[in-house]
Image (tube, rainbow, N blue to C red; front, side, top):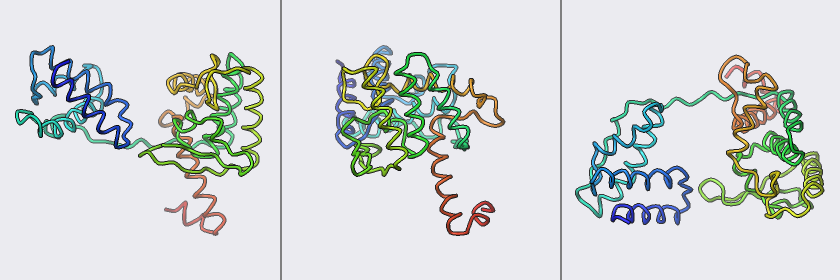
Length: 268
């Protein structure tokens, strides 16, 4: 292991100890260190950082800038240990971030998506994906939070769900409506009947008996959109994360309706 590769590992360990997830950073920085080694350099230079960041060539400027920002942050840290380190300027890759306008799902669209999920091949996968989509729609949870749930995270008596060590390492309680609780109980019964000896403590189980993986869900979701015709709707293609946005918007709309402020809310 080169000195730079060792420095990368120390940097990642430090930031993870502070609660950062660093999913892409944990992949990209070791790759960057290997790239520098292949280029015969033990020093971070702006030229090499830019050359590495612009890979693959067919990727978008947003992807390149994301990669370069990861190197830039590490370079700021590493310069304290190696004064030769160059910190890539922030304007090397012209890119202006534009937040995507979320798709707001209607209740009918959510129901249709869940019905299509229930028709997927493999009964346990169908049951799991149907329950996951329903839970996301009625709680506004992040997808990763739902997939990380364990059996012990559901308090059936108090009608609470515990989200553990989520964004920024924080945990929280999510109250559940009685209908949501009944749906989750039905799923748990089906799950245990279909896979009585699953090999992990996860609440949502895959066909193989392990935890449902996010990448698998992300691969199946476009198929559900195609089957329901939502991928042909005007505007941007809906995302699974838009269920979270839809929950927030519908909750605020409900508050405004209860307070008699719906006309003012829609005008804003």
